Image (cartoon, rainbow, N blue to C red; front, side, top):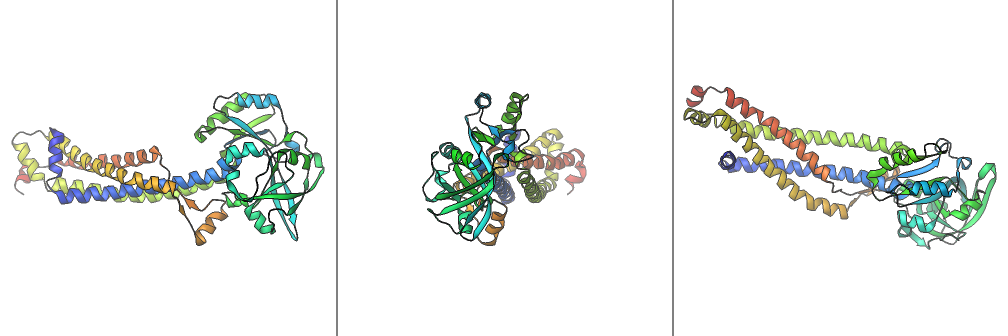
Length: 405
């Protein structure tokens, strides 16, 4: 009965109710949409730099991350591979040999990251073949290279040209080689695209004079949210060995700091929006309470309990704002789905600024239930706080004075 009375009451003044529902709905749409874009951008950033390159978890020799030299690499060890694969959620491993070398073509020279890979395994993990811009993909027996598109542009080379490499191999040996470019590949993260060269693992081991050697083991699993859990399990299994597992947050602290900093700014913007919602909700509650004080006085005078009026007032506030929240979510979901499949691609100076940070200049949305849940929680808290005013007003107002209004 209380809910039925509250429902009828809110539609006694249709204009005020519709204005309130519209304003809160708009605020819900803006809050959810903004957070979805923000978290979607972070997700894309992580996918480009982590999921499609470093991997979410890697296993190294204990000293490697502090001193990234080939001397701190790993000789491929079947027992180590079996220990890693014994973790239930792990689907497999990719072996990599990474180091830097000077690369030269014509009069142009630049430092580049040489990554020795198993082409087939890397293609399954990060979809290398789909990123081919020109030329052909390499296989494990090739003696040729894949070069990042921005690096190729800087050096002025094309498919079929020969690239000269000069670096330092295992135990200080000289690493010198000249290899044909079989393909140009475009990596999503511009910072990676400017320096990456892929070569078959066997060729990299020969070039660096590191037979059967690698520098990292990339652990493959499907759910990136399991990163911390898998890292901890691996480190427990590797506790008494010379190896350790590292999650992407440890390997890429700059990205974590950048996301945290940007997220703080986004939360501040959302907080301003919530303040606007709070004033709108409180204004509606204030008007509904003040203009009905005489009505409340009459109802109390004929025997209605004050607690009953309080409950009806709470229901009125909850009904109006619940309608607005549901309507806001219904409007937002299709918009988020659309921009998730068709992300906004930035252009001009904004795109260049984003690209300099090593981030692909696109803004997708992300359809995460937690985003909706957080906005609903905050708005319901605002509503419940605003509901305190009619409760206090009904409990304390002077009935005689209200009847004389």
